[in-house]
Image (cartoon, rainbow, N blue to C red; front, side, top):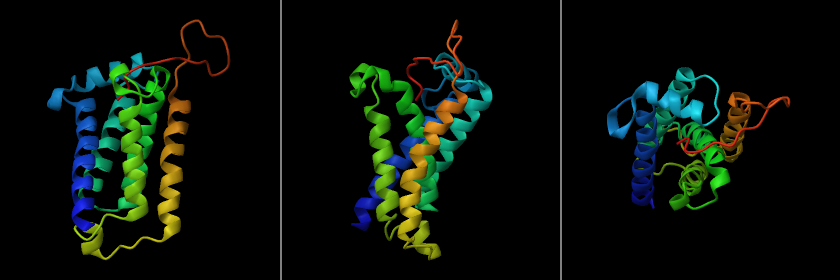
Length: 177
């Protein structure tokens, strides 16, 4: 089981971190910080550069911490949060990724939740530091707070659509992650 958790943490953690790198740089096929900021604006977010930096940093940090198995519940919470935001942007396109749907963010949220609940395994910094096992309430809190924080973030940073006169406005967007 420990070997499987190591593989899972490394693959998912590095992919989440890679998404963050793309948001803030030209590495890994990214469009640089200006491109990341424009992507968020197109997808209906306020904040431009600040939003791109916050999302990128959240993905890089949570991904690297997941990969290392360090502060796993906290890392999982952050990963679930940023990937929940990505899923909300893709929601209107349906589930499947071939239609630019939310399938991929959903898988990453589910894996982060599973890691929060199972722990990082023996081959982790949490194990080396003696911080595992985490109390069940910490893992459950991570699973609830991660997606909840993503939904709150999406609500707070949503920019009203052009011509929308309702309080808060709505905007259908695409391709946030």
